[in-house]
Amino acid sequence: MDGRRNTESTAESPATRPHRRPSRRNEILRRTAHLFLERGFEVTSLVDIAHATGVSKAGLYYHFRSKQDLLAAIVNYGHEILEDEIRKELADCRDDEEALRRLIHTYALSITREDDAAFAVLAVEEMRSLLPADREQITHRKNAFLDLFRERLKGLAAAGKLCDVDISTATHTLVGMVLWLPKWYRQPGRLTAGQMADEITKLAMNAVLPNCGSSA
Image (cartoon, rainbow, N blue to C red; front, side, top):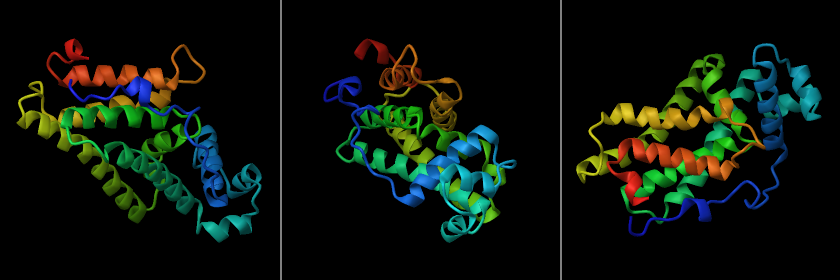
């Protein structure tokens, strides 16, 4: 496709991403996310979290009202990271096909990074543990993310570029396809995170675009 960016050569890999020193609060979120993922939210106590993060229980209460508040902060932090990266990726994109390709590739890279994969898994597996208000707010955020995919698919359909598929089904399938990655992909592996993102992007685009493989 004309003007299509080569995601494999230009995508920022975990090794080449600029180092951003996390704040103390964000360090707590990252370490606790991995702890929840390893042990489970219900059985992990604030004492466990304090030991893992090197912060006293009083220090934890300075940042968070409760364990559920901490979980909500973790899930929201994961969304913030992803949304920021996608915003930058789509800033100069005006073509629906290229925008969809960038969405899938950026999403796949984001949740295969070893330090960020926990956010994606917790956002799915621990939604039931959130307080109702937090669950509603995060669900709204998830729906806004789904809309990014849905609108690009609608644009492709309007231009006659989309396969004969139901847009809602395609939206959830594409997102779910990427979201499943942290459940089985581990680094180091046969494929790097960048190569895996390339593969997932190719599979996803071929699933919804006629003759996509011949134009890749």
